[in-house]
Image (cartoon, rainbow, N blue to C red; front, side, top):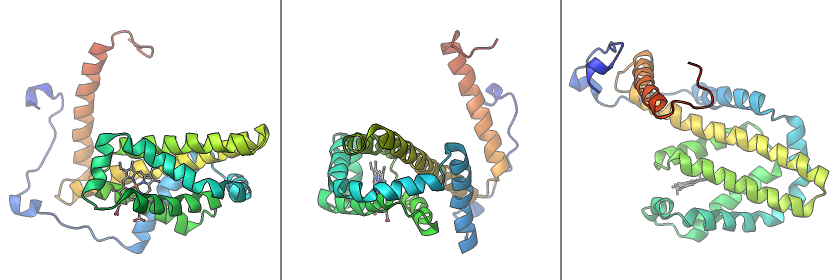
Length: 231
Ligand code: HEM
């Protein structure tokens, strides 16, 4: 980006090339847990996910668990209908049956509804696994919607309208928490990786703000009369 386009010149201290080499940030167990706990706390508060939701999900587990395989098969039918998504698995040398088994175990845990620290810590790890394999967030988030809608369809067939509504809302809230963990995993790990080069968080934030500001101005030109235009 040419400097003249920047209203505020970013204050960047150039780092000698040697110190740009990757420095791994060591993390204590406490810090590892703090990462997902702080995200989860916010997500629970804003989605409204609560203990009652857990109870509702636990009570429905027996009826839903027999549908596990069907839900997972539907998940991979949808995912593998996208050629680019399929590519991601090619280098792993795993067949579809292996993938399905992994997701069945994950879904079983979700449907059982015992959401203790181990459960949430694992969800954070699952999110980081996708970051490690360069699975773009768009895939993961879209597949959460697939999963949620498929589950809702099955719930409507099994339960009466009131129970379905209550259960679907509970799943919607927990899946909201899971997507929040997934997205924050990407965000934090990218920031954290950049930080290992020596670039400070504040400088990075300023650079992002400048980049975004320019793009917003460009989009405003493309959207002169958008519904929230104030001036
Ligand atoms: C609702 C969305 C998804 C869920 C719940 C999910 C769940 C999981 C789970 C439980 C694991 C194993 C993590 C572990 O090591 O314990 C995993 C790994 C993985 N997932 Fe997903 N996944 C989702 C979406 C996707 C999508 C959309 C893709 C690709 C397009 C994908 C690609 C992968 C890959 C490449 C791995 C690593 C496999 C390995 O290490 O053998 N996932 N996922």
